[in-house]
Image (tube, rainbow, N blue to C red; front, side):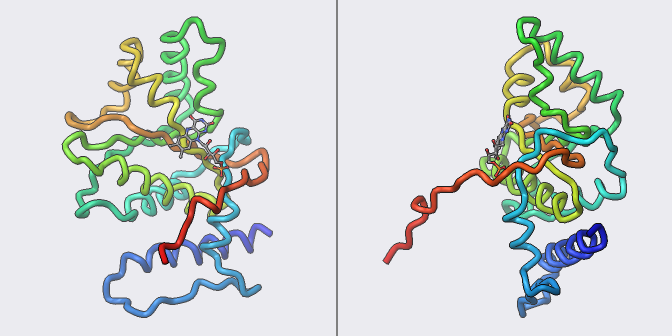
Length: 211
Ligand SMILES: Cc1cc2nc3c(=O)[nH]c(=O)nc-3n(C[C@H](O)[C@H](O)[C@H](O)COP(=O)(O)O)c2cc1C
């Protein structure tokens, strides 16, 4: 099973990498041995994970996920983002302690990180009006490539509000060290899933073809 997942992961990454090769004009189908499409399978199987195993994600795997993130489409290839990866438990604990102290009336403010052992903090360039979209697309590339490698994920907005809106959280932003002109705008939690949530229903009526 692990071998199949690794194989599927490799196919997915190859597909993603091939998108960056400008001289390839013919689309190659990314078909798995059972005749299924690996990218579509990964997209449809990914779910937000809110329960994680106490198991670290290796830097090698994280590097692959980050590589896929920065290969996301982005406006004018400005790469209008900055990324901070927190994978050390002691650094995450520091951040959580500051957050909990900043919200003394909440029983578990740091619960907004949903227990993910790795937290990726994304910041957008304030000077570029499409930067938030760039960051969103980057986050999706990270989450899909993660899932293709057997790593669960969750996109998180609530830590952004909690950290940006409360001056007592300034030490967190200082610790992350984003450059001047960048604003923290999204989190992606990563880790090995300890749950398998069902897909939430989607409203296909939102999609209409214009005839
Ligand atoms: C921009 C954005 C912000 C989100 N913020 C949170 C959050 O703060 N907490 C949380 O538990 N889930 C958060 N989610 C996850 C969504 O709740 C989830 O993607 C949605 O319910 C669909 O479920 P699925 O990802 O399993 O398909 C966020 C997702 C996005 C795209």
